[in-house]
Length: 472
Image (cartoon, rainbow, N blue to C red):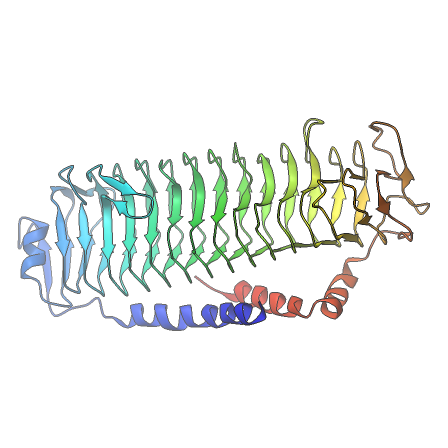
């Protein structure tokens, strides 16, 4: 695992020193400037006569065309609001098969509706097919099947675009690596949502995007989409999850904000998502805050805020070796059934350290006979409505060295329920709780403890510090 973490560090350095340098070193000021409609009436005619490195400038107007770009050039509209390319309703509107293409300043609409499969894509407003070092910038892409489709295309930049109301995916990466997807607005798309990586799309940077009101997820990574960085994205009011991962490992989800995603968690790792870092995210008013499910193992949840989610703040379901450190988990759970700040079901080797777990319907719930080796230490657990900690499983939960809201320790309770929200916290079940903390934990002790007990923590810290310095 440590080698994998270090490979992420190498990627972070290389993605900016290689992709940005190579893209920016390509001159968009070619040997000639061709103007449409002054020099040629159609954009495709201008493309056909252009030489490598030429620039085509397109004046305002509506152009009913399907474009094929097979040479390195710059194609720029004067203004994206009134320089509009409308396809024929069959196939893709703009198909790019060359490296080093700049496309900027258009509205693109009117692709066909052929969608092959989630693994193979389909018609799109803009397609990059086996391309490198291309830039798609300052575009409006709407009314297509897929908005922007990268197929086996590496090292491209997709930035500052509005991609909305497409019948399938907003931005779809298929088998595409090392791309930079930044500052896009991907909203009101159907299919798989705003930004979709499936399959085998790795080492991409997805940062500063807004994905809202999509019919599925805000951002979705699926089927061996590994080593990606998702940073500073806003995921709001999507029908399903804000961020969804399936069978994808070693990704970093950092400083994203997930608000009001209706029927799924703000962030979910679903089926065999291993060794991901989920750090510094804000998950508010979702169905759940963060959910780790179905054999998703070895993940780190660090410094997240899970607040006011309808059912649970954090769910660990049939997963092992996950570590929760320094999360704020408050006001989660709107009704008694299955709600808690942290809910652990049939999960093992769980470590919960230095979290603030307060004012939830229940603080922590453990259930399922497969829930073994649950370690809960140095947490502030207080003012939860029903229980601070209830263990419904048969195996003992190790919950020593926690602050229960009172120097006298927890209240051992055998009644069916407690709803007084008074400290000390009530606990129930097979729980080792003595000794306890006689005052709240001090945040300054966190790093020292983690450095000593978990050397891999130092690699996690270095990774997060480098991500914090990235500019885009």
